[in-house]
Image (cartoon, rainbow, N blue to C red; front, side, top):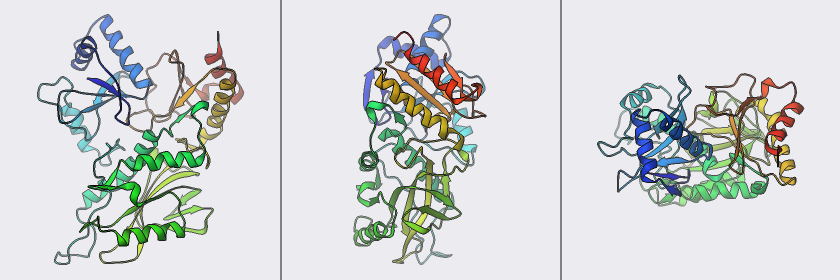
Length: 397
């Protein structure tokens, strides 16, 4: 068993004693101080935004995340969606009840997508000999592919570090998009077809035509449906149109809008659009499906869960910069995949102080099982909230 980052890089391997502790935790056989010891270890991994990878197989690494049980409020080990199966007898094998519950869900939640695995974002067209119109085959598979687009956007946000803010990690907009393009190079649209080869990070007619030209000339798609991706920060998505400063009339899309968190949120939004012909044999390319995640501003692509967070979140960013000027480095992270508490913000400083906060009037999901958790709604004003956070990290420095 080892601890890994979400980009799959190794943090460290667990000791034999730690592995035995986690095996007992997974089996529910721990008692006394061992329960506290296991929870402290798992909370440390979760707070660092890391995962566990099991060594039970030689050909693949089954990956587990550390989540909070919504009913009990306790930490639980969960196998990531679509992770490889453990070997028979492994103490971290998938729970059949958990798998059955996942199968029953009509719309699966966004899942972290492993790099170097073909994405399958869009179905192929029916052959002319098949009955019915020339449209994508297998509607259930098409729905899964649509949800895949949102999972892809959230995965890229996680791996590129856009969901993390610290003054010493600050990047301008060009650098933020460069990180996204770098991550895209590890995700193939099809076997040996990196998404970065057919990705434009600017939504306007010029770049749509550039992408169309590359797709029409491409031979790597073979008999598969040609498709590419457009990624950009847009002002709003209304109906089936994306609006940004480069077009007064907006850009039409034909399919579905997939949005993070179950609620539509106003812009700015980081939008990922699928670009392909809508019918077989057509040379007319159009935007098909769109996935979006609200961001703090056009210059800062930090994910925002609800509109009401924007003011206090900007205040936190400003406060983190001020504390950095006083020699106190604070890092703020928002989990976007794999957790039940998407409105949770985790602030850490030098690994010795951890503060979890929710900026919503009505927080979503269970309260995080951490020693220090605060709701912004419990404070009289933004200023008193700022003073509390500053005091928490700067006290006795």
